[in-house]
Length: 160
Image (cartoon, rainbow, N blue to C red; front, side, top):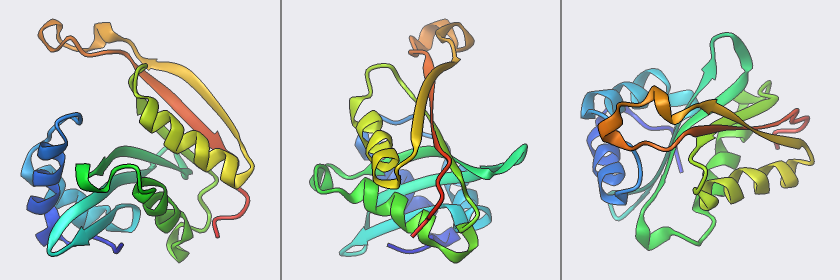
């Protein structure tokens, strides 16, 4: 697991596309994430292919809060703890030592993401909360998008 580079953008895009469960953004957006936000993103590769990726950024209004945008794990790697290992990697980085809160939006039925973040909260010994963030009415009718719930954990006192 390493910091991504702009050349990883296309591999990340393919991984996201192959998961079939995440919103697919443009290749360009993943190139920018792998470049501009490389300190708060992580890629896991195996045999030259991306098998895991987390995109995240510090909230501009609360720089000690890491907002996790997407967690992607290849089907072949699911159930092996890769998502949690990638989160640990992000929080253990020297440049992220001052992060005290982690946030992510998740769909109401996304039990895997909920388990991932609640497991991190338990591991770090901190509180968690789940509140409505973006109601379904914010999304175009044709998308039939579920509401997005905000899962917050913290304060994290030790990122090691």
